[in-house]
Length: 132
Image (cartoon, rainbow, N blue to C red):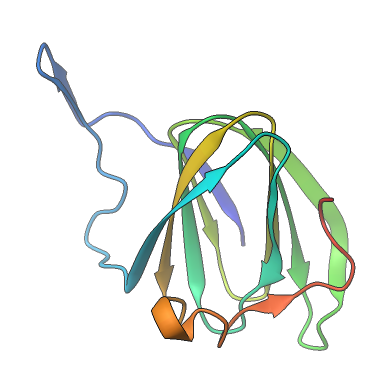
């Protein structure tokens, strides 16, 4: 199940703040992704990997839907506006896409094959786009 959670600071004082994005769960891959206004990214799903998205700045429309083992959409496409401090988990067979409402930055983490030369090995593009 796709989970969307607004993260809260662990600590804050005059020097700044500390926020734990993950605890007790190391990730195999981490990437910074930037968006220009109206840019669309994603429109894919993973069969083996769980992806996590943490919004650093900006504002994005997030669309998602569960995918069947036959690669069909199961149910209605859901949409939500997300902003800084939001953590989203995308389990296997959950398609996801983002469209930026303004310049935005996210961190994308993954458990499973997703990084470097393996980026496309567990990425399955959608024929019917969630966002355009």
